[in-house]
Length: 420
Ligand SMILES: Cc1ncc(COP(=O)(O)O)c(C=O)c1O
Image (cartoon, rainbow, N blue to C red; front, side, top):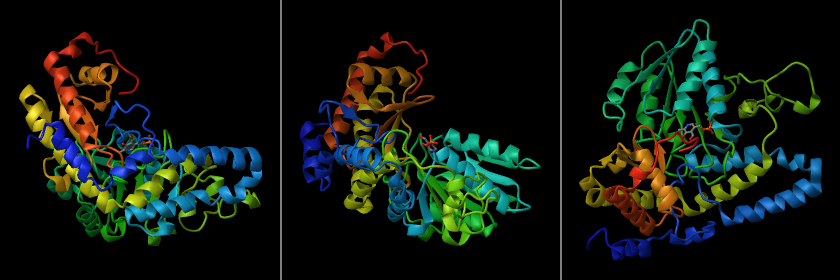
């Protein structure tokens, strides 16, 4: 059967055992092709209910009395996320942004790794990770050295070069597990074991992995990790991130931010800081409770669907995107910027075109398709398999091909947008 036909996509949707989950999300405009759940996930319907319940009963009604319950929310939610990433329930908490959590863990690791002063990363990493790393490096005395291992094709990481770069001076490897542009997925267990063999700690950014690909931090023996909740976990705009520290390391590391929520007895209001036991020392200030109510609804849906089923569908969807690319986009000169090998691919596919930004704008403003654009030329299509349909992927690629064929993007300027 012709893979570009509507019947083919309809058949794939018919066979989809997770299809029912789409109804659990708000889909206001059925004509909208939303392939940007890898940036901001759709809203779970139950989030409306839970948020208004929490606002009315707990905030408006309970007022400050709510804190006796709310105080436990970041650890309770962390325990649920732990199940998704293959960690133990006391190894994950929800707090702050991914960037702030990276800062806390990088500083803690550098402090712990006395006598070692190098951080190894790669150039597929997210810029914020690198910025935070640069900020941490200059806070050390003498400054820590950062080695950024380049990718040869900007699609696959050069893992051999990363392996070679890790040495006796390496304090920390800090790598994003699924790369935000190309979707390349690292071998967490292998790289972690290499870091350990050299006496380094391994920190993983799971922002494009959690809820997208199965993770097993315990099996990988990962030391440290952070991740977003507003992408595949569907936790809502600006929802706080999570932080993971392996149990045996928790008492050995100190957060660089000595806030009262990370203090042993915050409500004793003592004037001298003493770190809380365990992972709680990585809290800083008051947690955003309403955001956490929303995150929990997204996390519950992922747990219900199960990561194995989600991965199976996600792989089928990214494979289908690549087949559609071969038939419809490659003949128009579009490049594939994502690995063809599913075993090293996350849940999004990037298409490269020199006019990518303008094509992205036409898709959003005229064609009712929402992908996103990542400079210099990547148009990303995310498969958020709880709600993305095969029909949507087909329609999104068809509309993109039409924009390129008709050159409608030539009417658009390339003035800078605040958010792409
Ligand atoms: C891989 C990765 N790391 C870090 C961040 C930054 O997250 P935050 O803005 O929550 O600090 C992002 C944001 O998209 C990301 O994709």
